[in-house]
Length: 171
Figure 1: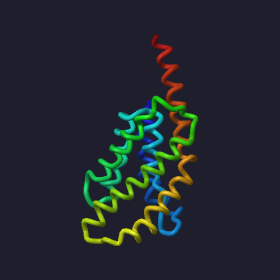
Figure 2: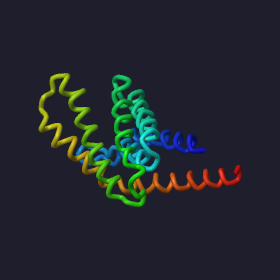
Figure 3: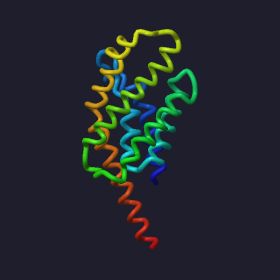
């Protein structure tokens, strides 16, 4: 059941990101829905599942939106693993840690994207990229992050309740 629900969530991400999310564009920047999903699942399910979901979303980004395969997958896997580390030591109902981790992860992904895609191609105008793309994306993603975290939290609670009920029937 969990795999089906996560697959449907990833499929909905794949449909929403290039279509409806583009209509939310402000100053040429869209919110980073992938980072919000990765961090939310990593905090709710742990490092391993966070890394798997991060790798999956990154691979979808590479295949459908990227120029090469593997770059976004590795970044997503790293974000999922690192953000899943505190999953056992914090209260899921606390929104401060997801908010903070989404900000840091969006910033880190933006910096990695700058270094590995723009800097290597000789585009060295870092301040332009930082002020016009990274900072607005971080702010915009942070503004929507609590809504997405709450949605994924609710989905995860329903899945876990169903799994507990199923285990109870088989015990």
